[in-house]
Image (cartoon, one colour):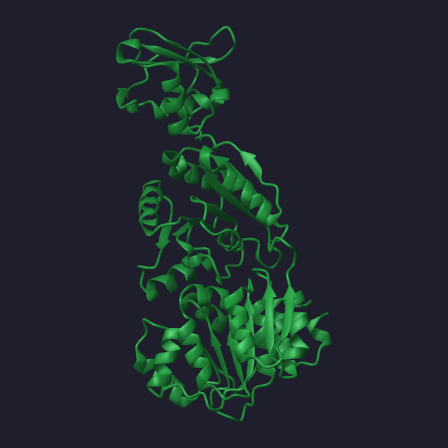
Length: 465
């Protein structure tokens, strides 16, 4: 169904047309009339499916412009999502007078929010803690609320906001319309629906069983833990991406990877829970405006953030929760665009990779670590060539240092990601060792073994001129 065909205010239709909204997504089409008629909804849909438009457009249609009181309250788990919902709502309202929207969340001064709310805000979007505080301070009044929306309900509850959410629900009029949207409907979400919603209509509008679009190319690369930072850098260079998010599981790793990529002269910023809200907002804004090459982030950026045109997602770590893998890579390939998602894993993690394939009902492409870019076509000219037509690289360690061929193979794998099947014959002599390599692998090994180590022993490449 097309937006131009439904019963909708002409100014809203005009704004949607300018935004390129033509055909309704599944969740939008299934929700529209039900929300418009005042019914309670429990909606489950895939990431990037247009949930904000699904609940906000019909909700706007029901707002009384003459009433200055707050009529719509949207509760979200994160500041970023609150800001994004308000930004998107304002786009829907571009040609509509008399309806305003405000994002409220921790980290902002109460005074500024109080001034705005006392002037009159019809749509309030915020995080549970700040909403509850403003209610207690009698700054946010809910007696005229018509519609209460819980967005990303599963995430909100998993973050421990159950008590805050239930307290807010208890403060709204009993006959208020309640809309609950979530990527998954677990027992905690069902509990709220059963306790607080009147004959709710359940809508399941998954685009497919995987909750992912077919526009995402998923690639898995096996590598050593010590090689992951370099591998992510090479992926970024290989893909020539103008907008990339690299996800890690820990704040510590975001800082380490940020420093590593910064030293590689990439325009990079980091986001984790320690970053203040103003900086977070600026980083997301720069990424959306294509002013950054890379953002290194924890899962604070995994859900609810819509970055149009994001080309590349790299998972340095496998997320502990399969659902978070879906949320992470769902940041790319938004609204019909295409994207690429990489995941790096060590050999021992292959079962987790297979588990993700099964979970997403997707067959990953398996690739090797990208090779280092050549700086010169003459890199291998002066190296000797073996009878098998392979280049011979000589290093300054051998039997006297207790080095074996398997040690050299292991070091090459750890330092470059090159697999053993791509290495030719290794001959370990008393004081030196020779390694046969195809031309495309010479630079990587040569660079790795220039002031590198094998079993803690300093290694240098011997000049083969």
